[in-house]
Each structure stands twice: as structure tokens, then as C-alpha cells.
Image 1 (cartoon, helix red, strand yellow):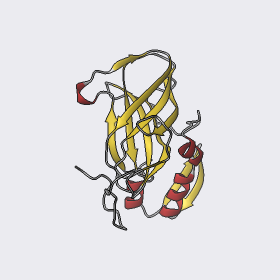
Image 2 (cartoon, one colour):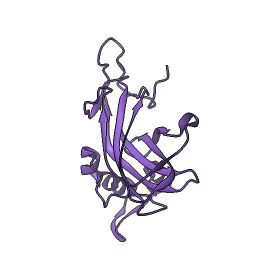
Image 3 (cartoon, helix red, strand yellow):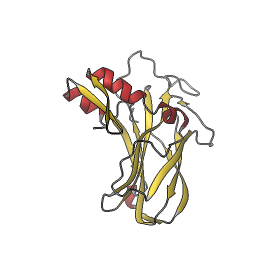
Image 4 (tube, helix red, strand yellow):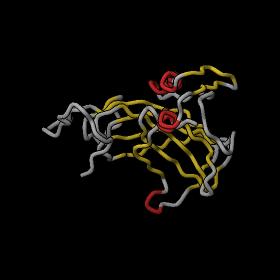
Length: 198
């Protein structure tokens, strides 16, 4: 499983397998921490290497290449102010046409708990044909995340549920306790939950 929350809550022992070999066998926390530390270069840089761990029901059709977190003006950021709207921009290389594609952007905690999820078919928007080539996509997300560490997961899927490419933990970022301006700070030492509703 790649769902670390489920592993931590259900298991008393864990085994980490890397390229078909046992990389670690032991206490759940130790194995999960090693798993989460793997791929930290990708999670720091947003450059998604060809050998990144991917879920692909239809291999060889498309690959995510990079992801960026920016403010609404397009400037790269690794931290967000409390309440700051943000943009996720990514590149996906399509090798074989996908007639009915839609993209997914998820924000998760480092242990894999999904916090928010958006797709390009939300609100009844139709899926679209993606021809071969590099597609650059960006989405403005207006969700008020509470102070924590988060990561971005990316997916490209077909209408029948086929996952063409899905990569977790592509880019890590932090949400601060202070707002960029004004007095709307998160004042408490302990954070309860992940999203503050208006």
C-alpha cells in the first residue's frame, strides 16, 4: 500500500520493498519514515524522474515530468501564508493519444492522507483529447489550508477510470501560521484539522 495512514493504523510490522527486494523489515514507524524519506529530491525540487514510483493502469502513454507551486502571480514558493490562495503548475508528457483525459491535483499530508482533490472535469467540464507532446497545465486552488506540511499528488485518468499516470508526493510545501497581511493569523500552538471553512 502507498497509504501510510492505513499502514500505521492497521499494521504492527511493515516491510518496505524496493524494486522487488526487501529494503527494510521492522517497526511500522521506522519503515514508514524510510519510505517517506525516499524520493525527497523529487519532493523538494518538483522534478519527477522517469523512475519515480507511479501507478499506471496503461503504462507508456503519459508521464508527469515536473510540478511547481506558485502564488497567483506565478512566482515559485515553497511556503504559503495562512489563507494564501495558490497555483499548481505541472508538465505532463503524452506519448500516445488519450481521447478522454482529465487531470487530478490532490493535496495530501506527507503520510498520504488526502486533504483536497480537484480535477479538470469538476463542475461538469468535459474530458478532453490529449495528443502526443508536452502539456503544461495550471490550476488556481482557493482552499484555506491550516498550518501543516503538505504535498502535491498528480494524476491523469480516462473517463472509464483507467489511471494513465499517478504520482504521489511530487512536491512538499508548508503552510505558515501567519497571514501575508492583516490580522487573520492562526494563533494556537496546536493545529486541529487541515482546512478552515469560511
